[in-house]
Image (cartoon, rainbow, N blue to C red; front, side, top):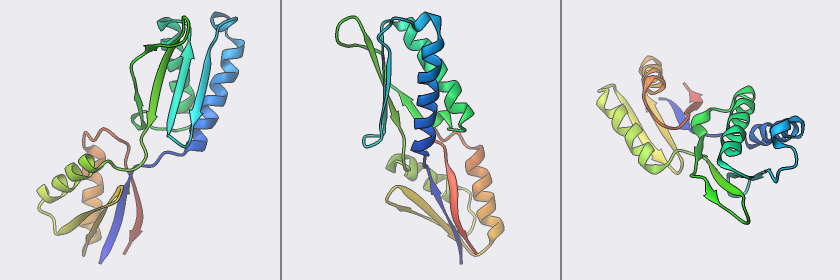
Length: 163
């Protein structure tokens, strides 16, 4: 019986590298000179925090970070941007959550989509991933193709292909 796992993982080291590159770019930008702007990655919580002085700088900071994340090949769907909130003094704070693993509601949606194909495969939710197994590799490849073309809101990777 052949199988593979559907996961959603982000390399936190690549995000850390993108943040460091953004910090370097901030030092050279004229519009950010003499401002209280910080970017912090909390690997434990899987979150990025941006602090700056106003909404315009928040947008510019988000764009710079997005460019550096794209250069590091981090899928933008892996990040969920929060709303800009007033912080201490006259600064603005924004929280960015990093998605790790397939959430249970998305896993249920994936399992339902797989069952709707009527292919002879089984899908089972396991913690933060979905295992798909079947006798024919062609059926498994059809499932992968269908999921790549779907409108799932998180990035998916297909790992541990066993035949």
